[in-house]
Amino acid sequence: MNEKEFISFESDYNNGAHPAVLRCLVETNPRPSASYGDDCWSRAAREKIARACDSPRADVFFLVGGTQTNAVVISALLAPYEGVVAVDTAHINVHESGAIEGTGHKVLALPGHNGLMDPDELASLLEAFHADPNRDHMVWPGMVYVTFPTELGTLYTRERLERIHATCRRYSIPLYIDGARLGYGLMASDCDFDLPWLARHCDAFYIGGTKMGALCGEAVVFPQGNAPAHFFTHVKRQGALLAKSRVVGVQFDALFTDGLYFDIARHALDMAARLRRLFVERGYEVTPSTTNQQFVLLTPEQVEHIARHVAFELWERVPGDARNRDLYRFVTSWATTQAHLDALAAALDTMP
Image (cartoon, rainbow, N blue to C red; front, side):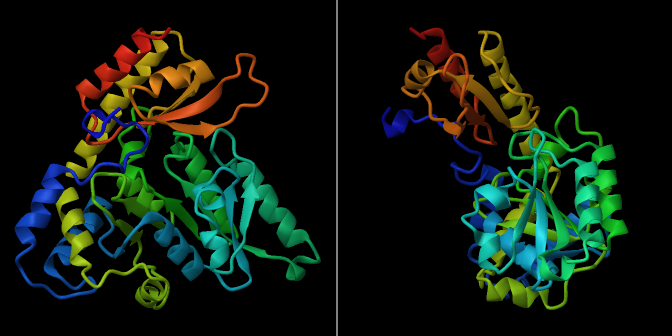
């Protein structure tokens, strides 16, 4: 496949910016501005995000990327002797190259259930820890981390998040939600809450830009004006602050104007639903996901053939599968078109 023909379902951040976002970057480019988040576009974006969250007191910060965001937020919320509770499949536990451990904090892993944290298991972990007379010799569970949607494309329900949030309240530890793909979760057909509800049921979260139509950047939200002391300094100290922070501010100002952020999500979800049908109608086994990430079980022969036509990603080895299949991920974004899906369909229909 030459570069001109390259069609990729590998991720939702392998294209540039959505045209409307890119247009705003170009149009504002000649204008000088203040630095470090004090430019007019960053201020406007913070106001629009706070309004979208129905959180007028929200503290909003713009950081450069997801891994930096998780490392900065988690280390700022934890005391030196504390760790973060997450499921074993969580991004911070698997795909962030030890970034959390690099800040001096341990990831305390619970078993994931199709990517989701079980509220009862969280409560049991915290109860057992606080009942242990040797707890002062151990890493304290100082916060809880969940992703929405999860790394497997699954969604937390209102009821499940309420229970996790209530447990965090009971033990006076913060709940932090990784929203790298937040829009895709909120706009999914089976999501039973909206952004303001989410903002009321956690202590911090971030709104992903990189995977949602921006060139780069994430927006960290402390919905009750509850940012940790000197959070700006934490951001800079860990290399997550742009001097030209307008680059991120302009993009979020565009994303939160006229509902563009949610329109991008709806488009990607529509493309993902069509992609899923291509596989289901041809008898392939797919895992449950109503988000822009779709997971398909494929044999080595199927992988070899499809990969000649489109790019996609191995997600997980499946030992013991009767047909020697593994789990592969196909991802849609703002840039996915019907022509891309047609190319995939043609590949499936010419399978030897």
